[in-house]
Length: 140
Image (cartoon, rainbow, N blue to C red; front, top):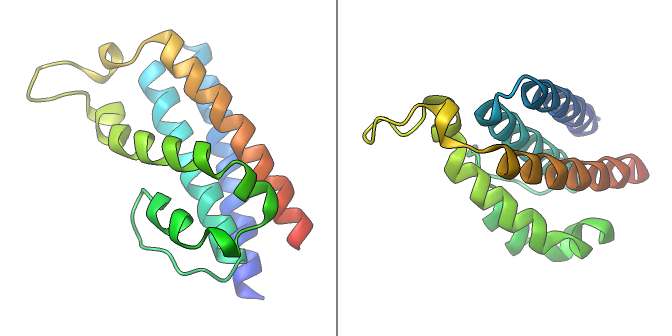
């Protein structure tokens, strides 16, 4: 029962992260949009892994586990797995720069991400999180 509770909590927080990503976008905080989108996708992915009984590392990028355990995932996730893995890996690598910028190069976070890219990320993450949300509730 605790795994189900945890999975639901992760998904609720993923949806909240998406709301915050949308707010960041509306305020032209494109780095914040990318960061909160990454967190939403991470939490939603971990919700699916948890409810599927799959152990995952306490890291931001769970794409290797998703790939390794794909046969144990719900069909809607498998159908979108390539996009989830690609975006999870990409966004995990941008998590730090989305918060701190590129410190060595002297590029602040507010200049590191452009509107078009952040909108693309937000749109794709919203789609994938919704697929994961539906899959989670179908399992529960």
